[in-house]
Amino acid sequence: MSDPTVTRWLPGATSGDPDALNEVIRLFRPGIYRYCRSRLPDHESAEDVTQEVTMAMIEALPRHRADDHTVGAFVYGIASNKVAMWHRASYRRPEVPIETTPDREDPEVGPAEIAESNDGLARLLETMDQLPDRFREILVLRVSAGLSAEEVGQVLGMTAGAVRIAQHRALVRLRELSAAEVRP
Amino acid sequence: MSILDDNDDLDLDLDLAALAETDAWLDQVARRTPDAHDPLATGLASWLDGIDDEYVPESVALPPTGITPPVGIRSGRRYRGRALAAVAVLGAASLAGVGVAAAAPGSPLYPVHRVVFGKVHPDPVPTPAKTTGHLSPTPPSHKPSSLGGAAVAALPGPHQAVTTPSTEDHRTPGHQPGSRGAGSSSGPGREGSDRDDRHGTDSGAREDTNSGHRSGSGNAQQSGKQGSGSNGHGSGGSRDGSGDGSGSGEGSGSGHDHGSGSGSRQDRVSTSDHGPGTGDPGPGAED
Image (cartoon, rainbow over all chains, first blue to last red; front, top):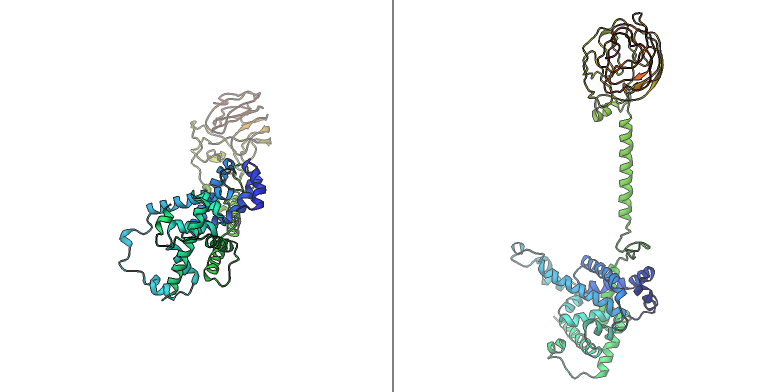
């Protein structure tokens, strides 16, 4: 995430120049949404969390120091925390009350329907969901946010080497799961 | 490291080449340039493209400085359309309200006006009424106007002066509720709708909305008495006598003139007398 455009605007943004801050937000926002959408179940939730991340970024960016993190790691660290907060909150607000839970599975979204679906993308998402959280987080940060292994390490508190090993394992696991999905 | 602990079943014989290859593979997917022969890479790239298609760019700016538009303000056309429709509806409603409020008797909107604002039009149409003859004294009585400023002047019997065509007149004979206002008139007797047998001219100000001040000088000859007098305050509505004089005044309350009096005549309730005037009030000129 060492975009030269971001690098150009970053000093002004951290010093409080509103135009520079505006440009930095404009550059980061699509990636923030992509990351949030990759980790959240629907578009609306991703929009909400993206907005929260943007606001938090406006407040925190003047405190950013390039010595500690790259700006990409800084921003996606905020995003990672906000997404984790969303998941914690979702555990506390179950959307389906117990008394309205159907006794049987919904036939419209049963295994037959899923099997009939020829959408490889849906299968891929299901496969991604089967990954351990940390693996999935690393892959999303690498692919959706476009962070480097070093930046992912800064976000997650890992070394770049540990990230490279973990992402390799995550990819191997993902291939195995995808092959299992394709097999009848 | 929990990642390593969670995956003991994986082959731990990782060489640097495999790690570098994976790193390059992920970079390709992130840049959306995957190997076309790798279904997993193309699937991930398609997944990212789908997410990008969902993204709706919004105007981005900083809220506190106000230099640029704030974050999160949607610029959708539907909001603009709703705002325009709301403005149009409000404008039409305002115009209709003004039309009803300004409706006068005879106007097609006057029935609506009566329903909305009451039965009496705020601007009564004066109707001349002759007040000839002798005004018999009536006990003074005050009754504040309940018509919200639209006063109706009425005198009993032939002296009745009607300043409004409205039939809603709660007054008792001999008093004239009124409200304040301002106006001027000149001419014989009382201006506007109120005429009696006085001869003279009134000049000055008087409001025809039955309130306010009237000043001027005039001659009122009613029973041969002449005089000039100053204003008085009084209430009541009957006048007895005649007078010739001049005077000016603004009156409050209703007064009855006895004998000859000049100057002002207080016919109204809730007005106040001010102003210079000369004249002989005559007997019982103003109560």
